[in-house]
Image (cartoon, rainbow, N blue to C red; front, side, top):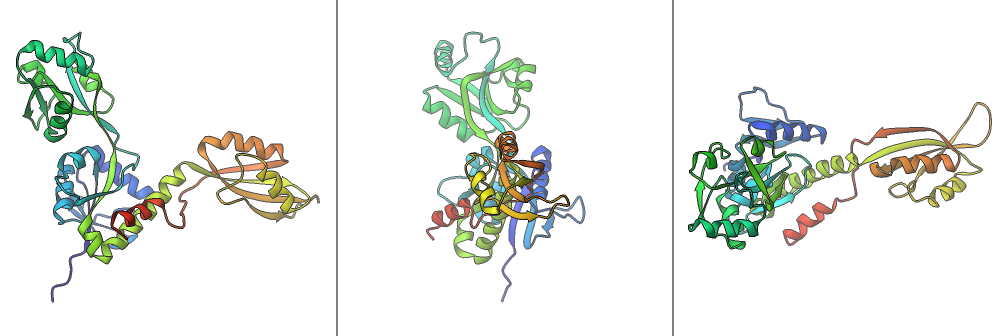
Length: 332
């Protein structure tokens, strides 16, 4: 009997997204090891049963859709462009926090009266023919232009799009924009309401693999556990302080009366044995990054000192909400 193939995760093979993906996985406790830089197969020591492949961003989506790979990390833009009909591609995590960009409709700066889609409709009518739009995203572009009632002809292009209006084979472009500098350098302007999709890196999976292979579902759980623990920790600090008080219960009561030092489920409080006498307690709490300054002020207000703040590497929950959402999506 032929042994089942290993569970597979596809990652981007080159470019900024590839580097950012490897960095993100390493910070999530999922460091990727590649024996040879030229190899297209690697492993993750934390998940030894998982085989890692490197592919082009668009091919990752196709591979997940067809089932040749079980998981992939790529941009939401190519997922929405290439996922195809049906529900074979399941987005497990839609906000990994890197690879941010916008799929945007842009026109020449010379069209100085065209700043919105309504302006573009009028300009297209004045042309007396459909708008010629160069893009690498024909499906998303067509849906957007049709939804806004703009007659168009799409010109599928694989090379540099920004030059298309200058050399005359397109009137406008739909392309990914990060800072907008490349558009400005080529005398193009994004429409004020021309954003088709806000994109970033996402984790996707093949639905059938999760439904039919217990090993794939187990990997999905563990990937989400590591990723969620890392992302949650990025927004929090571990804060430790010594607080004077007559008892641990009294310190806990004073902390509970403050809005920012309650911890996740509550503070951890233990006795301190000071050399100079007195009653002190060490308190440990997890504090949201946005609340850090307020939390330190509240600790001082209740008699705290020696405050230590350290980054949290991971915060594991009982079961992350995204795992619960995954199980609901699979009808479990």
